Image (cartoon, rainbow, N blue to C red; front, side):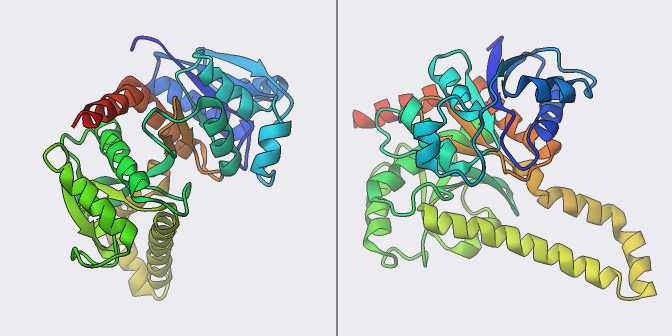
Length: 337
């Protein structure tokens, strides 16, 4: 794709235009073929743009209205129709932009995106997908909180979307798919995961279905795509983030505990820096709303410019690899079986 238009909600997140504009500037160096359509307060945007050393491929669509982090999704959908987020989503629906990135209110983003863009034919509910580091590399996990309760049909759809997502974003040739469960044995789990197992097993000649996995298998990288409902998926993600923070905290405490420990820190600093970079959550910033008629990426609200820039890169990668077209092809093919 020669020219990509990417809509960016510059008013979302904890830091608004200050962080988003810097991130867009950083991303523009990596993606010179992208034109950034910036939605938000023009005056504030120009102040931040003046501080950057690049960013020529952009245009500003002005609006003084924006959605706050504590706004109710229903109110945002019904009343804030001129908000930066709503206009950015509309831009994708009108085919002016190929996708969008926002660090704004997650509930509002989901509600507005689903209302405006609608779901892909064959997908009943969109899912939030994210990337996690493992012993063997990076994997996809979904759903991360969009759907607390799921049917087996939902989980099967998540599996198919996750497979194509892994191919498009991570370049995995034949992603293996696993269902998160309380045990790896087929007899374990509730009725929903058991039925999902049966449905995916029927498709095993067309997908690389591994079967059930347990929570401690996620970070081992046993499968490339972890499928679960939004309740369990969100808990798994937050638990992993908490454990990473705990490990870093313990290391900091121990290296400060004595003079000898401080010396050990100096000697091991290169290895520790590599370790820190490996688990840096900013590298994996950018949860994707899969199943919509358009690419929608949600950045963490507290992300810095490096993190937001990675969310932008994720959106661009999905656009360049024609994610939505590929998932439609997959669904069309499987519907004929």
